Length: 166
Image (cartoon, rainbow, N blue to C red):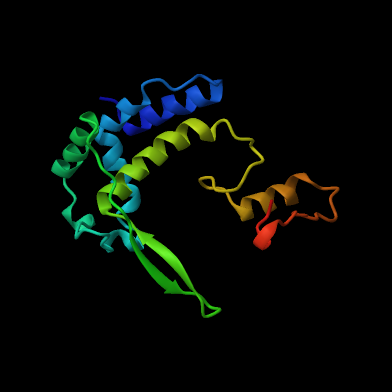
C-alpha cells in the first residue's frame, strides 16, 4: 500500500507528462488517502454539522473508513442527499446551503485530492483561480513583479441573461 504523498506525487507526474489515468477507481481503496483527507477536513467549522443523518466527525474511526472502502469495492456506496438550509445574506435575502453527511464529505475530499493531484500540473502557471495556495493575492503579486511595463489592466465580461457572465 502506497503512502499518500507517494501516490499523489505519482499522479502529479502522470498529469504533467499528459499520460492517461487508468484504474483510478482502485485508488479509492487506499485507507491512507482517507486518513490524509480526514486530517485536512476534520477541523473545518462544519465538521460537526449533521447532514440528513446524525453522522459527524465524532464517529470517525478506521472501521468507518473500511466500511466506505468495502462499499466502494462492492459498488454499493450510496451518496446521501444533503440537508438544505437557508442562511441570511447582508441584503436581507437568503442563500441555500447544503450540508452533506460526514462520510460523503470524506469521500469527496479523497476524490478531490486524487483529481487535483493529476490535473493541477496540466494548468498554466499563470492560472490562479480555485487552486491550492493560489488566488487573487498571488495573481496580483505576479502582476506586480513580472508585468513592469503595465499601467492599467481592464477586465471586460460579456453578461448574458439574468446578469450571468458568458
